[in-house]
Amino acid sequence: MKFRWTLMCATGMAVMQAVSAQGFKDCLGIQADPVRLACYDKLARNALPEKSVVITDAAPSAPPALPVVVRNALPPSPVSVLSERWELDPQSKAGVFQFRAHNPTYILPVYGSSSVNSLPSSPATGHALAQGRKQQATEVKFQLSFKTKLMEDLFDGRSDLWFGYTQQSWWQLYNSETSANFRETNYEPELILSTRTDYDLFGWRGRMVNLGLLHQSNGRDLPLSRSWNRIYAQAGLEQGNWVLLLRPWWRIPEGSKDDNPDITRYMGHGDLIAMWKRDGHIVSLLGRYNAGSGKGAAQADWAFPISRQLKGHLQLFSGYGDSLIDYNHSQTTVGIGVSLSEGL
Image (cartoon, rainbow, N blue to C red):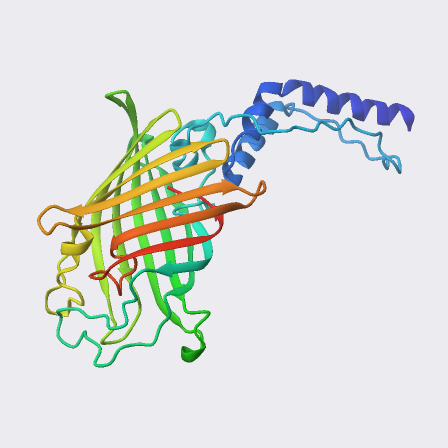
């Protein structure tokens, strides 16, 4: 028995030595769970011998004690932010049908507005309320978002097909007069064809181009129904701790069934996101602007560490289109809460 246990331990030590210490450090630095697990799986496959010996005797009742290594901080990730989120490099591949972060997932228990839109309206026929709604300026806002890869290595191995979903809700939790109703919920499914690129533009490295088909609606009946469909192209660039995402879009015409025919006047024809990430802090700035109408919006988000799995989240918004029901209503909002994941 002692000889067989010694043989088993020696075999295990040989396998562990076959995996480089640097490889473990690289895997440990990856934040996205599917990518980190895929990294460990790859190390394990490379370390396993072609032939193995099966020991049938029962193991000792108590295995030998193992050394414990305590780390004060995670090493830097071996892959960039864009590569980790969109699997742009071989070491970041996690396979299909893995749930990944898309847009941020957060809950803001305190979300206050400077201007309550109690009488939402649209120029479309039958899309204006006859009587104002009773609502409070302070409510709860939360967002859920994920994506999963449907197909990979398309078009000569350079492209992947993703499905993404984002849901935002504005909840009048503190409003007893309306039985704490959900004031608005927006649903946003999309298909994304992501193509890997590698070029230099004024010191920025262009990593990807996304082509997307996006639907957004609030699932309401008249007169509060709002929806639109877009086709977009998005370029992703990075430099050090910075990421830039430039996304122009074209709205698909809806004809006589259009809930909000003037929505691009307020929401514009695209958006720009700049993100900075360092030491667990993530700051992102989003901007939209229509030069023809002079309308637009800006949003700033700051996620800061609370624990390894949880971040605080501060959000500031100013302009038009905080939600679909408010697409043509200007306001300034501030929210504070926590986020579970920060996406791109």
